[in-house]
Length: 461
Image (spheres, one colour):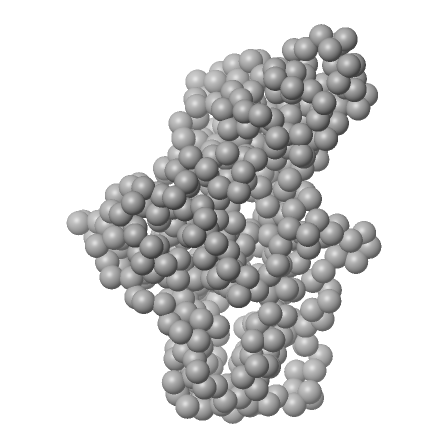
């Protein structure tokens, strides 16, 4: 409810409000929400409803075609105006234009605000009037623009009651957003509390305890060195302008805040790119990769998804994702490189899995980061840069605590044996309680062979 321009503008009208959320699985402009994001949505809606009830209102949730339901609701309640935030993808914008036209034909005014980005993506242009394709140049240009101060929660809200009979057959069963049998979200509930207040607490705790050490702490996979704000940003519980303003007050010129602010800039660049290049989630932005011969191996893909690749740092990251709905950013880079380089599997498979299993699933960020790690994006790590999982583990999990936490069958191993159990003698493994192929898999790919195969495929482009 804080820094919500659409809510703020509607409240300023002085008219009573209907606060509405529509889950549109009928005509989704991109992809339906993944399972983990639905679990998060359940908590986010409940939190928003509680906050509205504190001011005497409520939240109406519907399920179905937004293009049909929103004009119907506006007509049945004689809405003078409808307020929302601009969306980014051209399909979303086209849908919103159709809804706008239907509403205006009925006599309702439509007001749209930029509420999910730092600035209007049309406002950041090159000297030639185009859009930036390099994040560094974009970020430098964006910082010359004024970022509006975040808005406070409106102090006084009045509400319009919607009778139960209105669109009764379209009411959202919010319980259906949560898993039933099996309940795979047990680990999610242990790891997260959804809601606006919790998001603000995460931001405050990070600024107080972690941001100074962020330049190094952000890469240490076993430590709490990152902000863990991503699901709150993805759901709108925290706005990017709130993060921006908090960092400015904290002292954005010092190294920790400055680097964290640049990560917020990367998030903004992802959304900017989605706005200007709508093929981002669906196609390689670098046309060179249109001829890439990706492998199709369902067995390897499933082993990766389940954290059963036989490469400990990769398995640790994938199991953390499955159990908590989140993965450390450094681990995301490692598992992404392993899938697209060592296994030579299309990044779209990884993007789809993350989209379904991340509580912070964000359409722009997810696609942008996968294209970055695969080397297929407009700004990307070179394809010939192949992360060595062992070296990554030794550097960013030097004591092996992350691996031991998420791959407990290896917890009695140490040193090289923990990072590369396949290179360790059978007797040493047995003393650590490990039998490869029995209680921990052998690697599904030889790391050197996988790297060579990827480089050979790249050379053929």
